[in-house]
Length: 553
Image 1 (cartoon, rainbow, N blue to C red):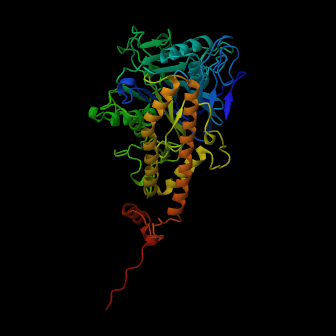
Image 2 (cartoon, rainbow, N blue to C red):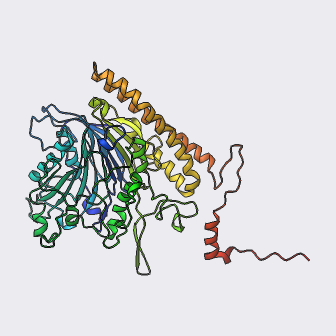
Image 3 (cartoon, rainbow, N blue to C red):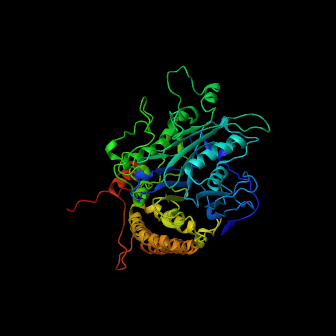
């Protein structure tokens, strides 16, 4: 396990080099925010899918400091003697090569999604902050979500922002914000620190989502309780020709800096539409904007869900291939004979000079891990700060509870390498099951979903009792409560991994050599769906057709 104590680290990011056409970067993540008033559990929630090909990470902890030392893995910008909060997060071993925070000891949670913006606005010299360090610094120095967004604003104004366009979710026990930032593309060799940013609070009782596209549009200029921003956010856009004040349109951050085009709408805003359409079917939101229909209205900044959302509801919203819509990825010839809702990259392709793109869903095979954070004021911080954690594809993972106060990382979350398969590594266990299922998806996915529901239902039902015990214990002995929750977190996370290894064995035995083994040990023919066989006949029927049988005389 990596636990960081002393020294300082320089954070590295390859996001700038990997942005695809200004639309969706390699860090193609999806965030959903649920405010306290929209939660059935009276909690603020943030989700995050860490999506990138070849991304391998391990869970880790940056310890708190009383100011007498500087924690390794944390930011080196705090003045000497400044106390910092303890932070639970992950240490990337590929793609992101350092620590990135998820939640601190005060239940402040943070997540991100890269929108990229305009490549020429990235500050390439002199500026300090890449987004992982900026997010981690916010968690080390802030006790509330508002403090976190204000701190990020101050840090980038003082030290500069060196990364591409980012949209950052922040929540605490009572409220949630989105902080969006872009560089200004200064060409100074040493003092390239410029940036523009805006932060907006999500109205209580509502939810919002963002997915590799800037989401803050027109924002209030005189409402500091709900919106703060850099002094140059509008003037710089005017200077660079990104906004015309004589256009008659109010200034919009996402329109000025988001570099929105048809590819970003289809790949990014469509995920927002899919979350909104399922959380609030009553709104009957059309897909038009995500499809790039001219004149279509953008989706609301936030919406009120048709019902208050449980953790199970949130997990379901993060599992989606546009199921049941005309964009359902398990249907059609592109889904193959077994309805595979995955598409090999690249997203964009060309045939006979015409351009096409696959759908980009929330659930995708290149997810390293995903989380659902929960921050609640009804419980002590050590008990209220919870991270539901799942390796690999959201659709085929199992979310297990890990409390942010944990003092130990589960062994399966702190081992392995992307270079070598190791079943005892949680990342590899979940990847193995998903990858084995893909070729015969529609047959095998019910087996996975059955075990997923079995485990997650067990975890959800256990939480209230576990937290009552922990909260009572914390009244007299907080250290004992933390150790109790640590033991519980480790046990449940390893329980999920062990059950997934058992599932892998079951799938190998049952779905072997193109057959589906019956309970009594028989291997009946599986065959292919008639709809797919008809396509085979249409394209290559002459290769397989048998001659007509001679009629009996």
